[in-house]
Length: 360
Image (tube, rainbow, N blue to C red):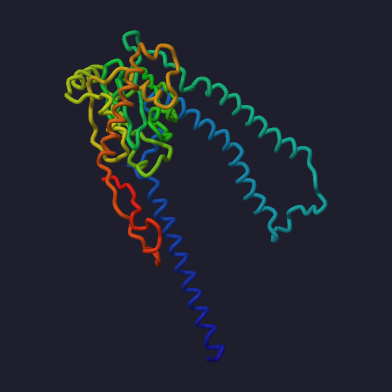
């Protein structure tokens, strides 16, 4: 085919492809801008419902604003330099041997140093002020802190209320305007406990105990989650934090104390088995010292009053229940022959008598 017949067709096809790409980019940009004013989407970190979350929001916005003092001028000046010193602008000063300006050096070093110092001072103060271990002062003398012991299981959350002897799974109930003292640990895999609208994410690790103090200043239902990947059930490891009035909280505690299900060692051993999509049970008569026993499973007694709190007895019960469960599983184990695919299997010693254990 002659060249003069190929070239126009190729150029027309290239123009058409280029136009199609341009239309595709315009459509994507339009869809992006259309999503911006959607009122149903909220950023939970910037919609806090507690004093800790409110302080963290202010810290994020202040730090962002301070850093934008550098980013925005750099972007603006870059565009200005591109326009002023373009090739077609003959009015711009041409200085090929220029290499130093004391004024520019002072500006480009002084401003970042001031910003870094300001951020350092602010972060130093807020790090101590927002320390997760630092207790929150009660807003009233008749509102003592509520204690909650949190255990990260695979893949669910166990919440124990030691002062009320009740426990829940994947459901956290808290009174409004009342400080909450969390103690956290994990059964096995490391996890991260996070309620974005209340603030402060804290990790939970097996054999260790961490603390967290939060407070909710508005009633409502807030999303809680695991913010650290911990295996195949990680995406289902979320819960609801229900913040109610004090009267409703007391009513819920009274109802929870009357449920027939109890959380003893045998129940906990079943509960700790990995799984997702479990119902949201409520337990009454939680065995004393359960949380300390879970921590002590891997580290052993860490203080002298472990026996007085019942943790040593609870640890013994959990170990006994786990051993009982293991014995039950072993009782269901049977053996099955291995089918060998080796060419000379008949000559191999014990090839037809080899067995493996299969758990039913």
